[in-house]
Length: 224
Image (cartoon, rainbow, N blue to C red; front, top):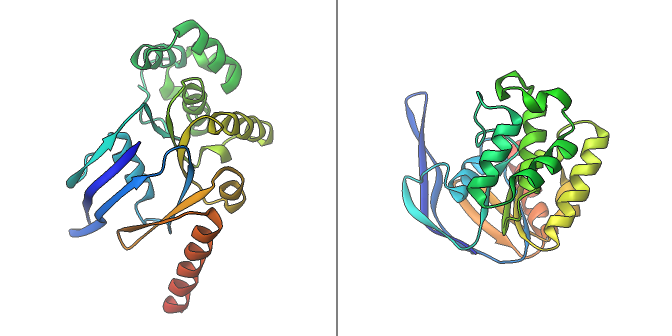
């Protein structure tokens, strides 16, 4: 269970204060895969980080029940001077899973060869995403936070990622950010739309996508 209580978050952009999240209160439904939609810069990644606890809100609080992943897709949870193996074993201990089993799973899944035993700072961004996603898929979280990761890598890795992700979603909740509407339709059954700092929930992903696309069309017409 994840509940947001009066969450606000502001940031300074070129000496101007911008309210990214504006007094958001919502309880996420359990057992759902929720697509988080919004234009570029709307604050989707910031919201995921606040839910994960890696970024603190300016005001309000997040109530969590169960294990919630970090925002999977980047490498913010990984240490750049540790190897892939060391990062994997550290997170295994942190989340209480068996280190050797997780290491075997990640080595096979991420498929980064000798780089698995090299420091993270030597990785490409794609390698970091593969490692982060592999570690997360090997840990039984109650809620997965996904930030564009199913689109990382080559076609083979994308297929493998989507297959494993679908398996995890059969027994867990998720909040997923993606610019791919086919991925949203494939994996998500409900949706959230973030615009103007406010968050609106839709019981079906199709309704959320329609609302999101209508907002984009209105914004494009206004700019034109």
